[in-house]
Amino acid sequence: MDTTSPCMQQVQEAIRSRRSVRAFLPDAVPQRLIERILESAARAPSGSNIQPWQVIVLTGTAREALCQDIETAALAGEPGQAEYAYYPRQWREPYLARRRTVGWALYGSLGIQRGQTERMAAQHRRNYCFFDAPVGLLFTMDRDMEQGSWLDLGMFAQNVMIAARSFGLDTCAQAAFNPYQHLIVKRLKIPAHRQLIMAMALGYADMAAPENNFPTEREPVHVFARFVDSLP
Image (cartoon, rainbow, N blue to C red; front, side, top):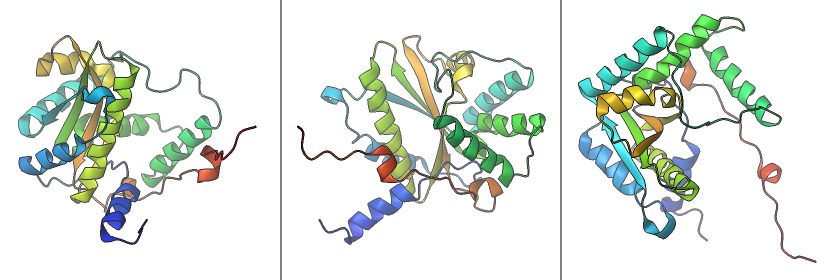
């Protein structure tokens, strides 16, 4: 395998440069460019090629109105209710340590100290404006789909993020919108047979923002992979 070919290097660069961006420039993303990203992402595999995903692309005043709805609810103390648990119900190691490490790296980049709960909450509410990205993506799926289709949608979403990098854009996958599905469904008239799975911010990263300039660690291969070449 020629790992030095330009094509291979471009793929590796798109994967390795993907990050969760939490501050975006206001520069608009042309609709045709969004369409090209989604066209590429749609090559994701899915069981029996059923392609169970749907995407709602929010820009302009539609994005602003939805963000305002959710931020108003959050500021009013409305907790919302997510339809599924994204995180484990009980944290344990090694996942707790990894979560804390990235959380404090983010807060540290912003100068937020332990105990500054209001500043932490304000940073969390930044999710609800898609971190000022000009494009918000909502990923939905029919409710009668099973767990395999959730895997399919995850691969599709990953393709969106990698395709975006190939065009010089950045993303942030977001579960923070899920507790406010009732507001999203009402505002966007999403059919009752569809469920919001996740959201994603899309745009051009503001690399002058400190929250976009802290490293996130990845475990080495030997920690999570086991190679087996024979069995007894």
